[in-house]
Image (tube, rainbow over all chains, first blue to last red; front, side, top):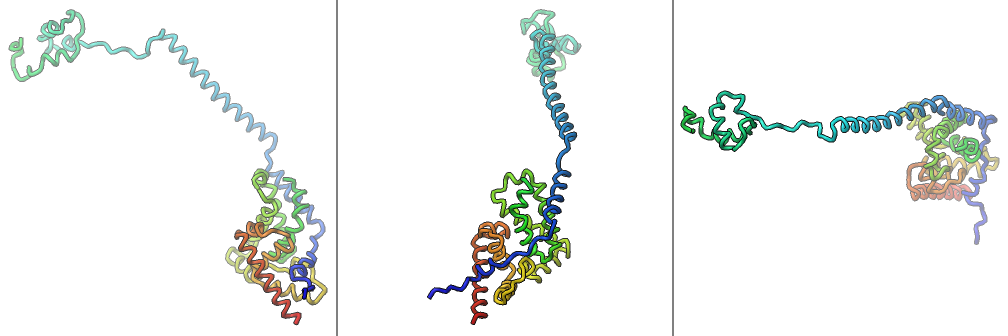
Length: 140
Length: 163
């Protein structure tokens, strides 16, 4: 036997919903529109934001261009040379009177011109063990 | 998102759901207004919404919970919701003239709150189980089982009264 009684689901679905109070649509939409208008960014704020963005981009671009120009200027001034000064060999014996005694021997051993500077290494090689002796004449 | 279009599609049903949740026409209108203000702020978020129907009901539900929390304090609000049964069919639906229907409505009001909500969203708002799950933060299967349990209880009660 088929049960022809309407099911509880159908019965419940047949119940009518309470109507919305009059004017509710306008009140609800009016409040939502007011919120949207308040949150919206004004044209003046858009302009200010766009101007700031343009300024930042321009500053970044100008920085790159100026940097390249400055580098080119420095390169032109140096005429292709490096900005760093090359280290010159130092004649340690010329300034130190204590080493002046052995200077001729160093010159002879290194085979350098008398006015040329000598590296520290040449003095060091000659002076190896010399500090153990009181008289440097023994060496020469 | 066009607000008029949104109201046209969901406004009345959301109002009915909020009436069911809150039990008062004034409160339901206030919360509906707050929900629409929220929709108005979500201009970008709308582009990410996959199911607008589930989304609007979820927002309305969250707003209703916030409203109850504000009204009576967080803990007291939750207690009040549980005490009131978490939903009132008689507030959202017109009083039926038939005695049998009135009894059915009374029995529906005696169901556990989660079953009542599933029933309301399914029967009166036409949401799918997946949508109900999304609105209530449960799985679609849980939503379906809540609905079926509620209907089964009502059937049993209806059989008991018809005998």
